[in-house]
Amino acid sequence: MEKTQNERTVLFVTKATPEDNEFTEWLAPRLEAAGYQVFADILNLEGGERWRKTLTRTLQDRAVKQLLICAGDGLHKNGVQEEIGIAADVSRTTGDEKFTIPLRVRSFRKVFGMGELQYLNFEDSYADGLADLLETLEKQNVPKLNEPLIQPQWEQHRRRNEIRLENRAETLTSNWVAIENAPDEIAYVAPTGPCDRDKLKRRANSFAFPTYPHLSGFITFASPLEMAEHFEGFGPIKTIATSRLSSFMEKGWSELDIKSREAKNILVALFRQAWERRLSSIGFQEYGWASGLGHHAAPAQIRINERVAWGPKEGKRRSVLRNVAKGRVWSYGVSAIPNLYPFPHFRLKARVLFSDIKENAKGDEDRQGSIIDDKERQHRHRRSDCKGWRNKSWHGRMMAFLELVAGGDSYISLPIGAGGNLVLNVMPIQMISPVTTPIVHDDEDAEETDPSTLAGDFDPEDGDTSDEEEAQK
View 1 (cartoon, rainbow, N blue to C red):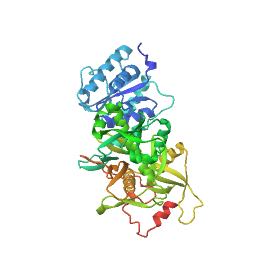
View 2 (view 1 turned 180 degrees about the horizontal axis):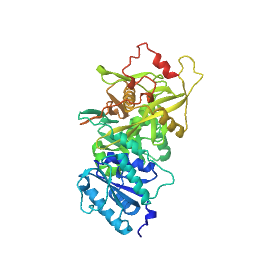
View 3 (view 1 turned 90 degrees about the horizontal axis):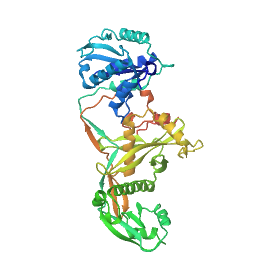
View 4 (view 1 turned 45 degrees about the horizontal axis):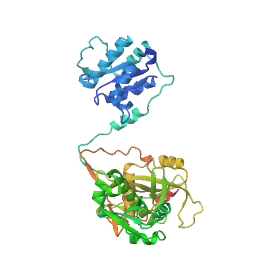
């Protein structure tokens, strides 16, 4: 059933992409400020939407007017032509001969079917064109919202598009660290006699090496000899079978009824355990986030406002992993997420953990008090206290964190059993972008107050403590 004009509320903007984006970004929020509801593809299409279907349904079922941007050769683009055709059908079915309102932004070549439409002139003056458009919409009784609503995304989209691209290559550092080496074999080990399987699994939680429960035993890289002492009381544990790691990852293990997909999930679980057990064993502070366990720089490892050096010897930089901000102590950390595609690697997710300040701390005693054990408060503090951290700062902290994990080595070794290690490259994977953008620091007041990556290369022994003292206030 065709909707009546009163049920239609949307001003549908038909335009060429990307040529007409800038004008649309100027026009749409001004129409919203006047009380109108606007639909334009650059803002109203969500990621993953079937965009052509959404555009068609909006124009057919919700649009009260089509605002047709006329500029250059844009009207001859296939998508614009299709929307003009749909609008013509809507005009006929609704009986609104003035359904399409052409907006002349600059000289254009007319298309068939538009010869009799009277356009509004924006070419000479945007302000005069807008005034004429608002008057036209008023005369044609186009409905308005009770309260004007300007979508903030218009300004965000406009500011993103203001960034100028430069035809100059730039090296970008990802948050992926490659798995450089792993044992050649993986094993299925199990007790040779009857035992309580639930107790066996619980005992495995505190084992030094990663295990994955399967049938009556475990998939693991550890040897029975390494397991003997920890699993004392469960009877002898033996290696039942072994598999080449590459074969297990690609094909699974048919003798154990493990298909390829399950094999990949098992490896991801084992690799995650290896990371988490290693970081916990060398003193990083654990915290259970909603999407996984995070490990954070701890008081025993590094002092508040201590700068951790990272990068090549000839260009060392320094970043802070613990500091005081707004009456709270923050500690940088990561959650590590293993992935096997397109090659084995860990993806690092940045975390910031907040704690109360220990007000009665004396002398050199660390000022970190109890962790704020409230997920909502943690989230609010991260949004406010870390607001000024730019990408460069996040990058510096990640690099410093990896240096702390590696202890100065070029690789991170995660013990996984049988004398073998899962070896990660401490340098995240880099890529070359063919273009770059100039970085404009237009909001220095939003920057954090501690001297870290963004403040340049500091010498911890330079004797200048004024910045440190300021950061502690």
